[in-house]
Length: 200
Image (cartoon, rainbow, N blue to C red; front, side):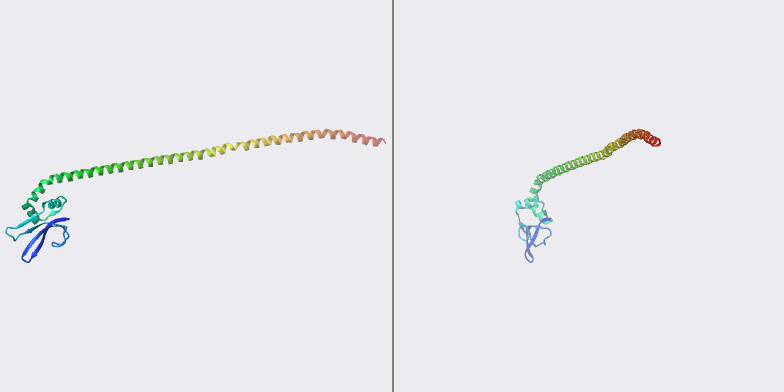
C-alpha cells in the first residue's frame, strides 16, 4: 500500500518534516517514492507547503494519507478539493466496475456458447457412433443369412447325385438283360452239339 506521510529531518530538537509518498513497508525515515511538500512546525508562523497537483494525483490513485498529513491537507485546502472531486472519481470507479462486469458477462456468454457447442459436437459424435454400431450389427446379421442361402446348392447337388447314380444303374441293368438272351440262345447250340455226337 502507498501512503502519504511525514519524514523527519533536521537537527536534534530542531526537527522539520517533508511530506513524502512512500511504500507502507518502508521505514519512517527510509526510502520514499516522491516528496510533495514540507512542514516546519517550529517556525513562527509554521510553514506548510504542499504541491496540490501531485497530492491530488496520489490521492486519486489510492494513496492513503496519515492523520498528520490529512490535517496538513485540510489546512492547505487540498483535502476540500479532493473531496469535491471524489464524486467524479467514484463515478469513474463505478463506470470501470460496470465495464468489468460487462466483460465478465461477455466472457461467461462465450464460455457457455463454447460449452454448448462442445456438448452438441459430443452428442453428434455419440449419434454417429450409434449409427455405425447399428450398421455393423445389421451387417453381422446379414452375413449368416447369406451363408444360409448358399447352403442349398450342395443339397441340390446331392439330390442330383442319386439321380445320376440311378441313371447309371439303369444302363447296367439293361446291359444285363441284353446279355441273358445270348446265353439262352447259346444253350440250344450246346444241346445240338451233344445230340450230334450221340448220333455219331
